Each structure stands twice: as structure tokens, then as C-alpha cells.
Length: 267
Length: 94
Image (cartoon, rainbow over all chains, first blue to last red; front, side, top):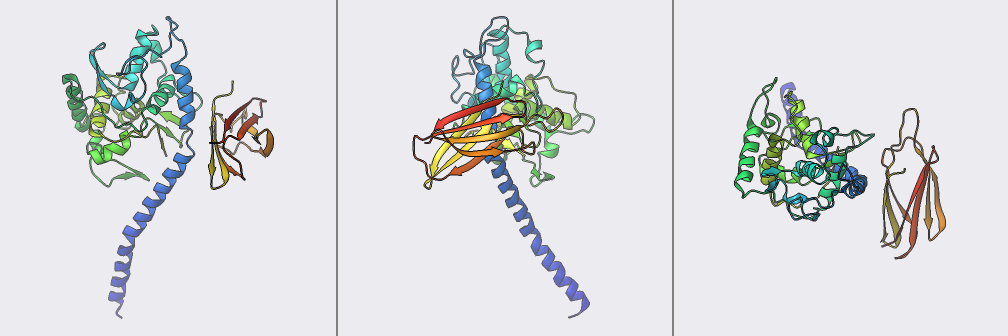
């Protein structure tokens, strides 16, 4: 065998190995994801959220038990799976966190400033929003995602969210689609889902909010979007603003029909 | 006050599988704050007495199997940490 053909053979062998290695890595990642899901403390956050939901707070010393998440005061079953949606009383489309904030200001009589003072917690002290999100979202397990998409304001939110997803701006001239725009991209072992396509949006939206094992924190969808904007070096978006709600509306409508199985557990 | 706990005990292939979640900071920096003892009781009888350390994660999950057991048996899991705080949970095997 000549030296050249030997090199050639080696090369063919090496190329043939690549898909196998990638497949193994993917399998290992799936195994890891299964392991972290089995050891997830998500239910503890749900329990903490239930306590807060029932706890009288604010100037009105009222609990959130009469909070209307779209299906009537206090109805939690499947409520999260139908958010974001249009709320007549507020005349805007709201996601879970903006609706909770609405209930805190209207039912409990708290100021927006006070209620949003600490929306993102840390590992030592999770925020009220994080606990409540876990509790409310947990009541939608098994229900298909069905965010509002019929009301003109819901359609408007979807269109705004879609526009924001592809809108490039900021110090690095990035959009959501810069990372989540092409298939097959990855940051370290984290695959980047192409979220404007239903097959990618479905499993993601069905598992947020979520507990992250790498920092022992429960994270809300508002945090997820806030942090994407931080990573893109944009100015910080306002919590529960029309823009952040619109993005969630766009993503959830894209994921429509997927049974909710969160709160999830992420790396 | 100690945070909530959650437990599931189910019959699995003739044994009792127990999965228990504990809310605890398991602080690994000073001042250390971690669970030292976990005790498991089956119908009031102690079947596991364990010692753990700060090497265990925050909000730990323990999963283990007890030999035998039957539907309706009472399983109790309790913990005690280095500050003397404790909590326990009891539930029936399903």
C-alpha cells in the first residue's frame, strides 16, 4: 500500500466516526437531562408558591386566591397553558408574570414598584414571582399549550413578538435569531433551538418556567427573555412589559398544541 | 423555619421505593449549614439511620428502596441539621 492511500484510508475512517461520536454525545446529553429531571426539586418550589398564593399580603391584606388568570377568579387548572392571553380588565395581553403583577396591585393593593422590587431571586432566596410561577405552571401539567391567538390584541402581540425575534439591534447588532435562527447550532452542550419553528418551540415552551441545576435557581420566562437581552447587550427590558409579553406570546403560539410538562429542569 | 418536604412511596417489584425532596440550603461556606442526619422509619420502626455531609447538594433528593412493605404502610423521613433545625414528613405507601 502506498503512503498516500494509507493516509486516504485513515481519513475515510476518521470521517465515518464523526456522526457516531455526535450521536453518542447526544445520547449522553439526553441521559444527563433525564438524570437531572429525576432529581429535580421543582415540586418544592411549587409548594413554596402555594404558600405564597394563599398568604394575605399588601395594604389590603389579601391573598392571590381570587386572582383571575383567565379562567375565572382562583381557577388554576390549565390556566398557565392558555397564557399569554388578552385580559379585558387590563385591556392588554398578559403573560403569567404580568398577570400576577396585576393581581398583586389590584387585589393586594401593592404598588407596582414594591411588587417588582425583586422579581429575580438567587439561590439563597428565590423571588416571590419564581415561587408563584412554579405553583401556577404546575397546575397545567398535561394540558396543551393554547395561548390566545384570536383577539386583535393577541394577534398584534404575536406580530410584535415575531418582529422582535428577528429585529437586530444593540451593541452587537444581534437579534434572537442570531443564535436561535439556524438549525444545528450549539453553545457548549446546549443546543440552540430555532424557536420560530414549531418543532423547536414546542419542547421548550412546554418546560418553562424551569429549575436550573447549574445554579440551583428556579427561573421564570420573564427572566429567560431578560437574560437573552442581557447576553445580546441590549438595555434591560422592563419586567412584564408589552415587548417581553409579546415575545412570549409569539413563542407560545408557535408551540401551540404541545402538552405542558413543566416546570422543567435544565442543566 | 424549615422549608417544605415532599415524599412519594410506591410499591415497585415487591419492594417499597421512596423518593423524598428536602428544602435545605446545604451551605458549603461559613457559616456552614447542612443536614447531618436523615432517618427513615417504617411503621414507626427505624430502618435507616444515615449521616450525610455538606457534600450533598442544595435542596437534595433522596431515592431508595426498602425491602418488602405493603400498601398503606407508614413511611416517615426526618432530618436534623448542624444548627439543630429539623423537619419530617410522613406518608402512606401507595
